[in-house]
Amino acid sequence: MITSNDNQQLKTIRKLHDKRQRQRTGLFIAEGEDLVQAAEDAGFEAEALLVAGVDVESELLASVSTLGSGTRVIGVYRQRWSPPGGRLSVYLHGIGDPGNVGTIIRSTHAFADGPVVLGPGCADPFAPKAVRASMGSIFARPPGRAAWDELDGSSIALDPRADAGVADVSLDGPVVLCLGSEREGLPESILDRAACRARIALNRGGPESLNVAMAATVALYERTRHEIRMADGG
Amino acid sequence: MITSNDNQQLKTIRKLHDKRQRQRTGLFIAEGEDLVQAAEDAGFEAEALLVAGVDVESELLASVSTLGSGTRVIGVYRQRWSPPGGRLSVYLHGIGDPGNVGTIIRSTHAFADGPVVLGPGCADPFAPKAVRASMGSIFARPPGRAAWDELDGSSIALDPRADAGVADVSLDGPVVLCLGSEREGLPESILDRAACRARIALNRGGPESLNVAMAATVALYERTRHEIRMADGG
Image (cartoon, rainbow over all chains, first blue to last red; front, side, top):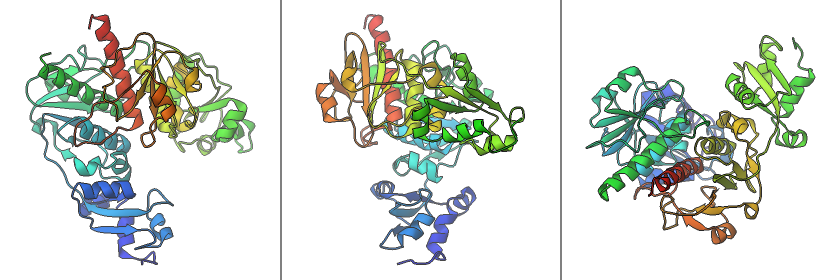
């Protein structure tokens, strides 16, 4: 039973709150029983696993948790990255909020067969907040990283100013849904070279755009429905 | 220019971080230029409006902000509540996270003509985190509060175990999308008495449910699309 703050495993966990330490070591942490279970289900082996009251005093575990008191288990895992691919996948540009990145990883796991590919300016998907928002999908469907022009497939650039709805676009082969931040959108270099631009139809008089995690989720859902309709003969 | 912590307006703002004080006074705060602009656009008159460097020293404003340094303006407003209604609206039961409540207020504003009606166990929609997540939709489309059996219209109870997809359900007249928390779902009393139960179709092998804000957004989008398809003759 760990009873000292000075313990090496506790020090490692504390360090992994920091992005540079995650990048340097290739490790990350998952906090709580649900996430640790998700890791196990996906075949991740813990580099370290500390259970409160068993391996470590509860107060000490709480002191290295981003959740504070009540954390019952923290696991340390090695990061995995997926190659880009799949019939439907997502590309993100400049999504700086880890909660949004994690949520989109989860929605993509729920609706698509490919990963979330992270372009420049995105939050670290292995940040504790992103891991938590992914609700375990970070393990089941690890993210990818690539530049946009390295991707195969036809890109649909989400753009609130587009004429076509995301449901109306017919494309053969793999599709990549591309999203930029709500405020900045996608860079012109992607908007100009994507197979098409499409928007999510919103109420007149309502907000002009959706939170990026909402937009990604609706677009994923719609593309999945679109494929089903096509398979049913339109 | 306010230069003392002891100022009455600063004290009021600090108090309004607290739910009981919001309930007692019927007031709430909006932090940041975008939200204050949204309030003005929606015809809300500020009970107090403090601009950093103009009405109050920047450090003092930061000290009463939930956002900390960098807050340039805080407005105090009187809460408004909408009556239930509309062709499409949302009912929430037991959604305790203010970020989720605020996000759903925004998505409902984006896709529906009715409000979000809050049932028992929901977070205060006028909490700073909810106001922020609503991105101003709290002003443009204030929430309602009612018990489920006070609502008019046909209820679709979102339920991951349902057979029908939310797109497949045909109902005449106003529709109320009802959602419970991701973990607990809706109570049996609502599931049993709703016009129907429906789910959002997810990938096999993926997560068994979506975050409630994602589920609400997709369901709202799908019902809007459904109405358009019906209007086009199916």
